Length: 198
Image (cartoon, rainbow, N blue to C red; front, side, top):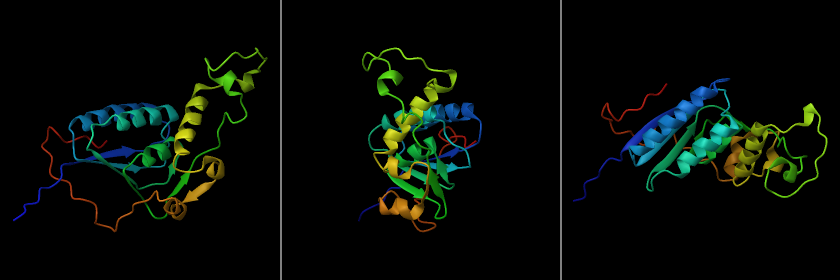
């Protein structure tokens, strides 16, 4: 007779507050600690109206991509997503999103810039006068990188600057919504394993 063993699951909440970059950095470090527990499943719940800054989204991506093998990543977006939050959600092995939620990412702020002038080391470029309104912001370069990574899942040129519905995400095979109550039940964690959800 087969005996079934419950999967070890770690729940992890990632709130999306407005205007609090320090929160995301702290949560990224706690995410790294949660992965060191080597759960079989890591469930990330995204909730709130904020947007993960591009640099922090790239940090979270690097943490998730370097997770030990065998950890399944389930991401449930309970809110609409924008910008860097979209990239983090797309990294899930299983992705769920509220049925009436939306996804939005702005156009590439560097689309009109010459890449040789934006990124050092890509070649020699003649120095050109640029006024203070045309200076290149490192955050824009990070956001451009985020869009390139989103483009691996969704055509950025087609959807940037537009609101994307869950139905459209389904057409691209990006949503794994399960019926209510069908999420795997989390095994109780010892107090030393429990991660703070705030």
